[in-house]
Length: 295
Image (tube, rainbow, N blue to C red; front, top):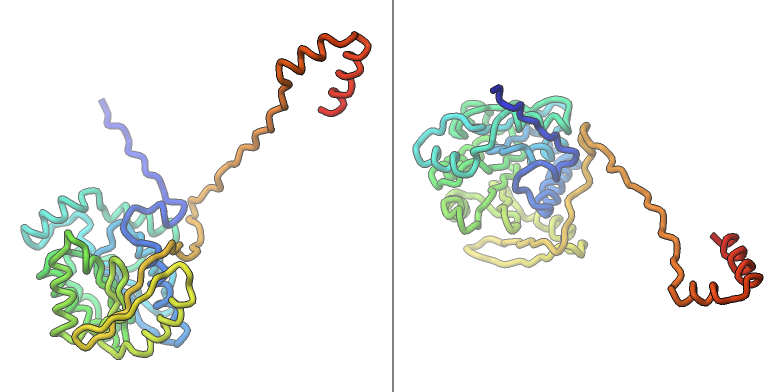
């Protein structure tokens, strides 16, 4: 018997794409990328670890003319070592390049440059000092994240922004170690911390922090606090009901059909029906004529 053909449901909105990209981080990505554009800060975009495209779809919207967006992911291919292979099999078994591309092309006319390989190849694929924004969300293993951070430092422009995913999740201690090691020993300077991501730079974060604090304190849907540790100012941001930024619908979006159901006609109580029936016929007919005109 022939195998049943697998059907694919195209996303109508970014929220339909599976993945982990909270609304708060969608707002922060948008703010950082818009700030770079309004200040004429040009450069390429890079994402290490794309999964099914949820964050890549937003990043692609901020690509300016003459810039390049590169995505690097294994997409179910061969992992470089046993630990990475086990991680991929456990967490990303459903990931395929075809699924990523279908999702991305639902919202954009052209694909980014896609590198189907371990993130360790990125230094030889992307030029040093070429990117303004790098999102690291590939492996959760310490050695790989450490190397990805090192590659990002080479690839970023001096005032570029790097975002480290899962820097504080209980199931990703390797990311936490690599992230704070970079802050303490490798010159990375935090700009802000969300629940899930660390935003940093190897430049001076002071000016961007002040602008970010002004924006966040003007929003009722964000909680903000500032702490100091090991000589760094840490801006902590949490969601208080944040909704993601507006995003154009997918080319596959279908407006939901709203069915108009007529309101039910009021029903007379049994007592009222009995009362009408007991009236003299002349009065009963008059009452019924009045009610018919009211319907």
